[in-house]
Image 1 (cartoon, rainbow, N blue to C red):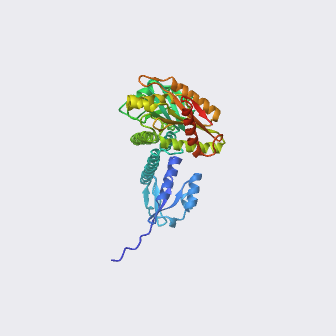
Image 2 (tube, rainbow, N blue to C red; image 1 turned 180 degrees about the vertical axis):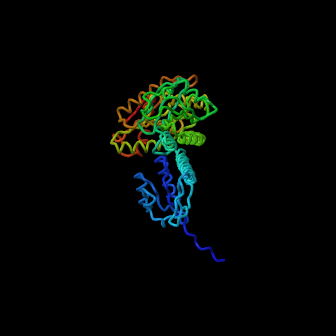
Image 3 (tube, one colour; image 1 turned 90 degrees about the vertical axis):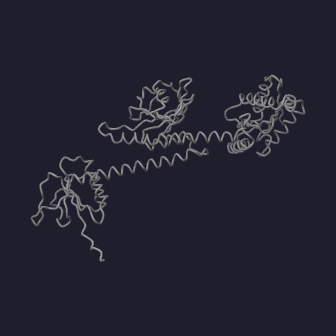
Length: 448
């Protein structure tokens, strides 16, 4: 069969109706420009007062925009798109020009705009879901709390999002971070109000709206909104509950579409966010188990090695000192042989608890093996390290175990760069100093 010859394209001349708003008219014109193909094309636009945006788009697409119908050649179009109440317009042949109802054109434009809006929502949600896959890895330059705030703010087009932790026992809330940054000071604390507590304890929903004053937040940011959304990250009640404070964008009262989109995005994101939060928390538990000694809960040998390598690189780069303490419980073998390993384990837990209370938050503390422990002191030279070692020794001497009795430590000290010039020499030197303390009578600190 011979294919049908191609038909002539339908060339539409779009005439602006009276009384239509500028925004709606611009949207209709641009939609018809997008929909033009080889079969149906927008031949021209009759617009007495075209907007600058339409003129730019039309000029780029080569579509004439004229103030009057008579300004465009009759042979350049085949159909008129004109408002329904407009009288017929006669062609040069004296017949009514073929017309397309403007209401049909307007409905088509609205459907296309709605489709584009849904595609925009879909693309934003897809980007949001992809960003949440980055919440599971733990080795990130951007903290988990910051990433979750940024991802949700992008999805919701919100003015701001803050990651918070509520403590139900002392009725307080701590803001960990926010997006944009510096919206709040990190670790800002404010009272847990009854309104926020009610939302967090509700098991039938993920989120709820509150007036900003009812949240209790101090120095509320100027986000241009009169509401705050409290968004739970866990669907349970516990002493510490993570949640988000979302500051929605301001919505015009006469335009409910953005609010509907905002609510739909919240509904879609809630189960995904809770699942990603649970996965991340589970990874943290597994990571902690992998890095810590199961009995004493301090760092294990591998984690100590990694901590020391990192601390040494920082010390070299910043030209700072770095000290290492190696310590051993005196006569620990006798405790195990006399009272059994259960009592020995109890002594280990008591000793590590006492040592941990003497250290700074940034110090490294781990079990090197058996009854031997290592403390890594970034930024401390030998004299200060010896003072810390004496503090540890005295803290342990105060322990009196019900069966093992008095407990003492022998501690060796090594320092970079005063004692050694390489990372690999720190632990061996501290170990030699520790055995020197034992040979000198135990219960003492020794340094070179």
